[in-house]
Amino acid sequence: MNTATTPEAIQVLTDRTDQVWTKGSGKAFKCDRKSTAGSVTQRACAFCGSRVVLYPIADALHIVHGPIGCAVYNWDIRGAMSSGPQLHRNSFSTDLAEKEVIFGGEKKLKESLVELIEYYKPKAAFVYSTCIVGLIGDDVDAVCKSVTQVTGVDCIPVDSPGFKGTKKSGYQAACEAAFKLVGTGDTGGISKYSINLLGEFNIAGEAWMIREYFEKIGIEVVATITGDGRVDDLRRCHGAALNLVQCSGSMTHLAKKLKEDYGIPMQRVSFFGFEDTARALYAAAEYFGDEDLMKRAQELVRSEIAKYAPTLRAYKKLLKGKKAALYVGGAFKAFSLVTALRTLGMQTVLAGTQTGSAEDYEQLKEICDPGTVIVDDSNPLELAKFVLEKDVDLFIGGVKERPIAFKLGVAFCDHNHERKIPLAGFEGMAHFADEVARSALSPVWKFAPRRSLPRVTQNKEGVSA
Ligand code: SF4
Picture: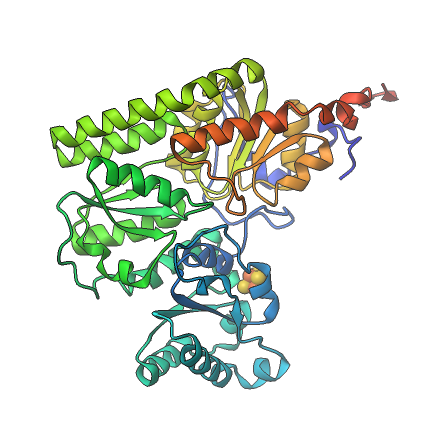
């Protein structure tokens, strides 16, 4: 990408114009569709979608049935921490090559599974299908059944060939696979005030912080799905009274299945920012209708805010008026980030997601300020166009957005699953403010080309400064 490129010179692809929307424009907005051919989407493949969801289950064996490249592409993909086993951090693969593509890979899969199960003794095994397996037609279900019989360890196929659909299709495949374990464990001894945390992946230990909040106010967390996850927790999670769904894009399907089959209600929550964390704790307390529980929740919120509010106030003075762009996987994170940035005195001028639904975008449109550009399933050039056009001070995204920001000379804050700093909860909000300030206020951006050189624009007569 040429840093001298002007936003005017970058065109939005014709087929994507209705996936780009400006608040106040009144035009139609479309989402929830396959990526446009020719647009270098920021989305990952369906296989990657399933892998990011199941990967944090730490005592399970995860084996990628496909060429080695697929496994390498998302090896150790999340900064998902485990308080015990670390088996999930290995990236096993059947390493399919020409011979298996021609004669089939079932034999190799069976041998690999048996050998790995004998050696590592996992609680269960997840077998991910990749594109080539979808093409050659290996019967992964049959292999899993036969290895389960031989070893006595549940082998669960994940129907996730990369071409299956969008990343969302991979999320769904992961939920279907996880659901196969649900209902197979003993629910005895679970408190009547109990929850499951769905879509919490324990990035940098966030699930531990959130779990502690609930335990302090008297609510038992039966399973975090899938952060610091355990196979046995999944087996008994149907004994919880309520499901709190954080990453709604990835886990709504599982929550719906738990509702349909076990009658467990679900609530969408977020633990990013003071307001949303407090709201999530109050929502759970209110659901159980216990006054003491609510009082404890209020006390916890009060004391945590008192602890970190002075830090936020100090950063707000420094950050007031700065402009931010954000591009994230799911919409709920986008809502929370808009609110959290506002708490720091910053304005969101560009917001987008990879997998938002129509309902999500309605909410996003509502909370954003007039003039904010909203994009669905965007690509690097489009993002660059609006980052330049809006002259943003900070870009928030993940590993694929980082080079876009740095090439344009824009500060960047990693809010994705590779980061090593906890940003959830009250303490996490203080870390977030610190991260944002350190990046956005760094003197280095003064020397970035877009700020230090006069912008070159093109008019009818030619190029002028
Ligand atoms: S698109 Fe297919 S080949 Fe590429 S990483 Fe995904 S599963 Fe593997």
